[in-house]
Image 1 (cartoon, one colour):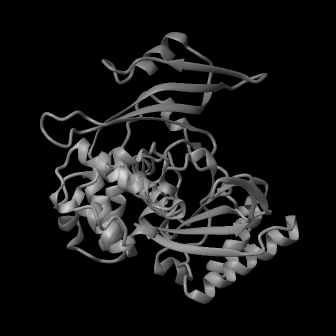
Image 2 (cartoon, rainbow, N blue to C red):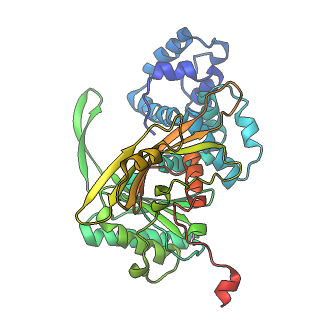
Image 3 (tube, one colour):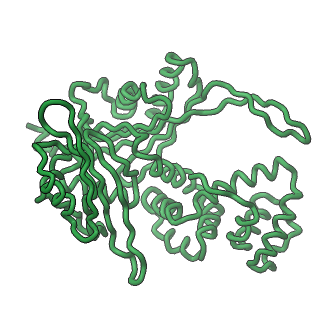
Length: 400
C-alpha cells in the first residue's frame, strides 16, 4: 500500500529506541548517535536525518527501501494484518499483547520488523491482496471443495506450469516463484514471473547510466475451499484467466480438467432487492448496525433495452428507494445493479460509527475488497441470499 514517505517525518514518528536498534544492531551504522539520550522531538529527528544523509548512497537506498516498507504498514490495517499473521498462521497467542505495548503505529510496526521478521512477508502480502479493487479480480465459485495441496512439490509444479505457459504464449516468464500465505479460510498464492528485460536510467556515483534489469509481473490466486471459490488477479493478463484457472486446478487441486459448462457466471442474485419486503440478514456478532439500499438500476422487461436508475436518500427512511419505485410505477423489471450503505456500531462510546458504501452488479461484479469489514459485508450478502455460494457436500451426500 503506497504512502507518502519523508525520512524526517519517519524519524519523528518512530520511537528513538527502536531507531537505535535498527541502525546500530541491524545496519551497524550511525554508531556515533546516542539514540537512548535523544528526546522524542523534531530537533532529534533532524539530528538523525543529518547523520543519515552522510551515509554512502547504496546504504541509504537500502535503508530507505526498508523504511518505506515499514511506513506502508504503519496504520491500523497494517497492524491488524501483522496480528492476524502472528495468531492465525504462526499461532503466537502472546503477540497481540506484545505489539500493543508500543504506543504508536510506527512503533508497533518497527518493533515487529525487528523482532518478528517471519511475520512480515505474509502480513504485507495479505494486506496488499485485500486492498486490490474487486474490479481487478476474476471469480468463479463452482469448484469442488477440495483441500489445496501446498507441499513444496505442489508449489514447484505450479511454478513450472506457469513458467512454461507464459514462455509458450509470450516468450517471457522464464523464472517463477510462488509464495503461499493463509488468511482465515483463504489460501493466497502470489506468483512472481520474470518479465521482458528493461533498461532504466540510474545514478551511479555522480553519473547517470542505463542499467538493464529484469522486472517481474504478478499473478495472485485466492482459493477458498469452503466456498469452492477461486479469485484470480492477473493485471494485463485477463485474457488468460480461464487458462490460469485450469493451471491452478491441475497443480493445486489435482483436477485434470475444469468443466467450463458448469462455470457459474452468476455470482450475485439481485432481483431479491427489488422487493420492498427484502431485508439484509446481519450475521450474529458482525458489528453491523444497519444496511440500506441507496440506489437501484433496473432493466425493464419488454421490448427493447430499457434501463432506469432509481436513487433516494435512506437517511430518514430505509425504504425510500422503494417509495420512489412505487411512485414511478415501472413495468416488471430485473435489478442489475445496487448501491448499498452499511453502518457499523461505534467501537467505543463516544467514537464515530464506521460506514461503507459499495456497489454490486449482476451477474458477478462487486467493488468490495477481501478482508476486514468488507469481508463481514460479504458474509451478510451470503446470509441474505445475494451472493450465491455452493454449499460444501456432506459426507452422506458424497456417499450417495
